[in-house]
Image (cartoon, rainbow, N blue to C red; front, side):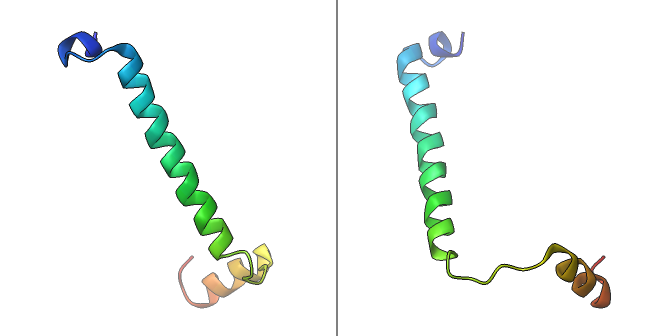
Length: 56
């Protein structure tokens, strides 16, 4: 239905959606690479710190 409304083929719509999804994945991978050398934080320690600072 949408393809007919905007005069594009279903293939064009699928390709555009796929490109958007892959671009988001590329952004996620870049962010992961940028943060790879950051230290790992213990979940419980983070929760305690948030509580101490009144964030939780």
